[in-house]
Structures are given as C-alpha cells and as structure tokens.
Image (cartoon, rainbow, N blue to C red; front, top):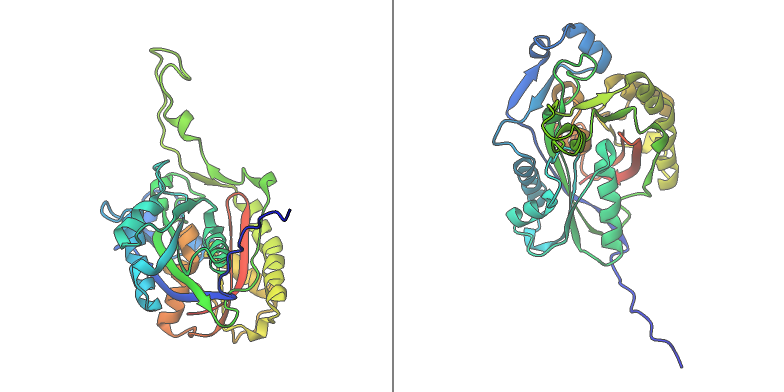
Length: 345
C-alpha cells in the first residue's frame, strides 16, 4: 500500500528587497555631550570610531514606535499594503520585555492581520539573519511578502561612565520588505557564529542577577546591589576578528553570488567602526569607484538597525541606485555574522 505523501509547498523561485525605510530619533548626541560623561576628546572619538554624533531615542520613541515608522516607509516604497505581509521578523537586542515578542505588537499596529510575527536576537548580524529567513519563507511558499526590521534602543544599555563604549552606541530602526522576484535578488547568505568568543561583547550581567528576588540570591532580608545591566565590549579582540575574519566572509558572499568587487554598486557593512570598514575595503580590494556606507559618522553603532538605515541613506542621497548590487555584512555579539549580495530596491 502506498503511503500518503505531504503535498510540497511551492513559492517564488527568487526573492528581492522591494522597499526600505528608516527611522532616526530626534535627539542628536554630539561628541561634545559625550565628553561630559567620560575623559576623552572629540579627536580621539573620531579617530577611534569615525563617530561625530549619534541619535538617542526619547521617551516616546520606543522600539515599537521606531519600528512602525520605519516599516511604514518600507511598505510605501514597496507599493504594497500591510495586509499583504505574510510575516514580520524583528531583529533586536534592546526590547527589554522578555515576552511577548515586540513583533506581534508591531504587526498589529501596522495592520498585518494574523501574519506570523517573531523576534530574533542576533545583535549586529540580526538584519542579515532576518533577510535569510525571509528569503526562505518566500521561496518555500510560506509567505508572499515578509517585513524584516532591525531596531535598537542601545542608549538603554549604555554605561555613560564606560570610556570604551559610552561614545559608540545609537538608536534607530530600519525596515525592508522582501518579496517575490523574477530574477535573483538575494544571494546565498554566508552566516555563522563563534560561541568561543561569546564574552568579548556581552551584557554586564544577566537580568536574574541584576534584579534577583531577595530570597533567591542574597537570602531573606539581605541588601541587594541593583545595578542596571549595560553592554560591555573588549575592543581589541573584536577589532581583530572583524578585520581579518569578516573580510573572508564578505569575499565568500561575493563568490557565492558569482559577483566580483568591481561589479558592486555599493558596499554596506554593519556600521561598527570606520577603521573596520576601511580595513575591509582594503582586504576586499574594493575599487575606489564603489560607494561605501559611512552612516556611522552621524548615527553611531545601531546594531541590527545599521545596515537598513545605511541602505536607506545611500539610496536617498543618490550614492547608490535602485537595481545596483550591494554587498552587505553584519557582525557582532555572539559572535555572529551574516553576509550576502543583494539587489537594491
């Protein structure tokens, strides 16, 4: 007797980014303000990171609100309605409520109906991870359009007294609509992790130790030290890893897509550090004619939001153009990474 077989799902042969949008908080934090917190100089900050200013969210600029604003722009550019979205993926490490996922609230606010919605935690590689998941959902027949959001309020996790990180992080949201395509618009994703280096970028302490119940850690009646957790980074190991290993990953993404560096219309790396970007350009032998995202100068390091924010800025400024091929690569805490060649919307 023949065993029954599951009918296979069928989706689009290819996918691409149809629209991109960003949201940058109103408040600008120049280096001069950072110097009120730490013993440093504007020249030192610019030389070490390339950052001149960053945006920090105000009380009304929540993770949800910034995401909705960015997503609205991406939906409009894609020329679709929210009801057509078949999945919402939110990459963030700074939504501080454990459950439910902030993606469900965002989907509801946008009017995405009953679309599946979930959060992922892949730090600065989060947007790339979300893009890979969206590509699989569309080509696997599980969605026609997927909204991918990278959003952070890293100011909530910044220790303003830490000279090594106080000047780095910013807030913001970037969103992309991924949907079907007649031609390949997202190359093979080169992604992975290295958990042996999990401690080089991390939260200073877990929530359960930061805010433990009196009888759970200290014993009944004992005084507790409630210190808000913050992000901590061991800069030198991160810099070496990003420069040497991530250039190899970027080259693998080019090779997998069958594209050479001189065929690119843009290079959009995670906005971690201008020196890392410059080192990767050199390692990839990127021609001077290829525009490179340097959004970090005005936005700071926005982790999962940095690539879509930089992509939007390059398109709006005319540095890059619709239909151009762009190499994107994200890398950060975990350690995790994700790189791909994409067609710009």
